[in-house]
Amino acid sequence: MKKITMLLLAMSIAFSQNQLIIPPAMTGNNFELTLQESEMEFFPGIFTQTMGVSFPILGPTLIMEKGEEVNITFDNQLPDTTTIHWHGMHVPAEFDGGPHTPIPPNTVWNPHFTVKDHASTMWYHPHLMHKTNEHVQMGIAGFVIVKDDEEALLDLPREYGVDDIPLVFQTKTLDDNYQIVTNMDSSGLDLYLFTNGTIDAYFDVPAQIIRFRLLNGSSERSFNIGLDNNESFSVIGTDGGLLAEPVELNQLLMSPGERYEILVDLNDMTGDTISIMNFGSTIPDGVYGAGTVGGMGGSSIPYYADNSLNGSDFTLLELRITNPTDAPITSIPASLVTVSPWNPDDVDETRTIQFSPVNMGPDGALNGPFQFNGQPFNINVVNYEIPLNNVEIWELQNQSQIAHPFHIHDVQFTILEIDGQAPPLHMQGWKDVVLVPPQNGTAKFITKFEDFSDTSVPYMYHCHILTHEETGMMGQFIVIDTSSAGIEEFESLPTDFTLYNPFPNPFNPNTSIRFDIHVDARNVSRIQIFDITGRLVDTLIEDILEPGIHEIQWNGSNQPSGVYFVVLEIGNHAQTQKLILLK
Ligand code: C2O
Ligand code: CU
Ligand code: CU
Image 1 (tube, protein in one colour):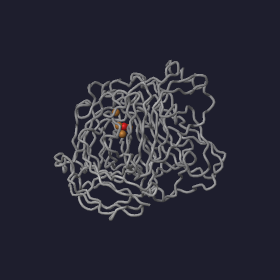
Image 2 (tube, protein in one colour):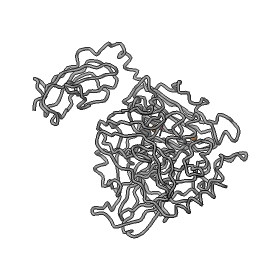
Image 3 (cartoon, helix red, strand yellow):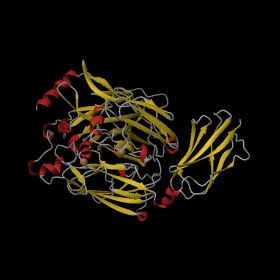
Image 4 (cartoon, helix red, strand yellow):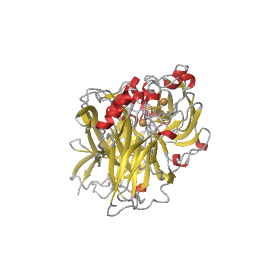
């Protein structure tokens, strides 16, 4: 009760509204970022300690192109070890940024990978064991916007910060001094809503079709997104890509970790004000954020009943509508992209994961800790070894009182069933989080474990309620390349990685490189070009290569004439060929 009075007080201090923060966008192939401590003046005259990525709170939006090689550095200037995970992205395990890839203070982590995802809205956030919730709550998180050719052909809003707007919704607990509380016992007091790190936010938007990239970045709370005028909006994208066609909805439930892209029609509304709302009053029982969760035998989540956000409708962002831009998008495309889910007929393996409380009392069934298949997370145990290229169905069974948003790394999946039914249309796209309903609720998805195998670094799967994840509701898998059992026997590659062409040397920037690989090494191969000083000039391929002749294009027109080395790496082995570039 004391906290609620405090909230009212806080609201009266902050009666004036704040302009929404739009995280700055970064483009290109190189992203240099710093993890840092900082502070924000959320309330006039009061400074709240925060953490951010090159900014006082949150981090820049990294805009990446599918097919491009990106190179990222995270310089950790926090007093703490952390990690940065690419939530939703299909990247090699060593660069996935899970709990196995710590970044100690004063060190730099340098993940680099080829972007393989569909055009989508992904995000990055810390993932160190026992520190994920703390670091996310303090403010570390950012968007990744992936673009691709298919999306580029569509008539969609894509002017960042104007008609294409990222929105991350997060609730936090603040103490009497307005400092962020990260201890998990107080997590039920998440009374303060932040939209893009802004309290009580408004934003000016032009009177046309606006694309919002929504992310629920909260540790526990689900939101039920809608508009205060109850008009419908069009869902165009799920976690990992665009839908086949827009789906019209009035309310959209989003659990932690999930993203949706929506289009809102503001044509002819210049001068109006509308709000994006959370309709908490219609969140189903058992989902964190609803008026009631479980409640079996009088049990409850600590502070839940006192938290005025639970079960109530409140504003997430006020939109003040201004004149349209010069070349506005004014209509919603009828169709979007081709979504090609994996076929259940091709399934190699079906796995079942049961969610259950560690302690079977009424309190345990609601508050956890929870575990998968009767085992709490153990960082030294690999729960599944998955053969590379396996198509799998995962069946999730929730034997607890609360709904859990299940998330898996490495892959995007499509949902086959929720509680035995086909998922609603707006969920029939690529997903990496699925909310599994409470009280014997089930969900089933299909996916394929492609491209990356690694016998030493696992990928994770877990509940994205961060307090559940950190108290044991997590597991891990490695993807193993069973067909490459022989690769370990090579001391080095056989000496027949041959550049056929350019032939005869020298190479000019308009020819393509042909080469022959004789090994059946069904492992990820990488071809890189270095200059004579050893500087990496380009990465041409990062993929599984069949033995045989391949042809690739290297555009060396920006490089000076001279000697270069083409290096083929398969697994741990590398082999080099010389190339003379002449322009
Ligand atoms: Cu968004 Cu494993 O996390
Ligand atoms: Cu993830
Ligand atoms: Cu959970």
